[in-house]
Length: 339
Image 1 (tube, rainbow, N blue to C red):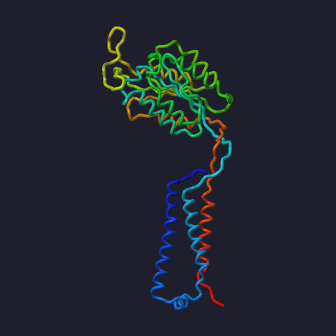
Image 2 (spheres, rainbow, N blue to C red):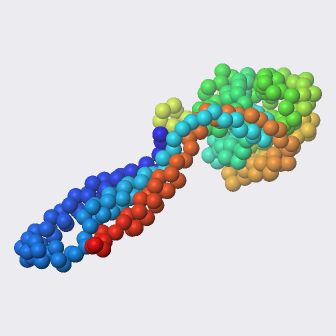
């Protein structure tokens, strides 16, 4: 058994307190009766009083309060396995973790802004299956396709540039990994729309992605891109690990400070060829709302999932018992006509 509002259970301590209070009050009345009235006079004043009825009235009153408190706490009892049908799309988010994503031309940084927008995307999901790919020169399936959005957030939170062995960017690796993830789905023949969303600043230092992109198209996977950064560009700050103090800026092999810019042309080309659309985030107050609206227009498929713990609310039974006890308490007479 579990409780919906277990805080109300603290009210149960009132029951014994009320019983003790009623007992004390009765003792007070008894003491005054013996002080001011004789037994015969008091009996005549309370002619027709029914002690047993009064006792039952108190029992049902306290029982009604007990059941009412339990009902307020919301008891849930019983489990069952049930299958739920959900409708949605299959989507993989490919997040660029290259060194240039540390740039701060979009506050607080390109990477943190991308993670924030992905988190907003997760909040809007309703029955969609979503996975996460992280990539630089190599790509890894950080989270397989899932409808467990809490787990997806955990994988997103730990995504950092330092976890990758390479600091360059290779879209070919991300696309190849995405295709493998889509093909690994058990219901790969589902009629749900398949979407790959690439979030990057567009800088590409890898091999040609043309073949990998064509393979996605051949498998009916639409590719959308979101560019993060500004065309003016900025430097890549370096912070001391632990203290988070600025210690300099990233430099190339010749010692010159590296400047990174949003390469929107590359991302536009990928989206156009991949039957998707390109969006950009150049300022901190910009988001992916336009992309989210576009997702609502895509064809949704039906997925089956199982919930293994289905606790049923049972408060209505406790509420019914409480009502019944209180009604009975009201109907029980404490006086009755003497024959």
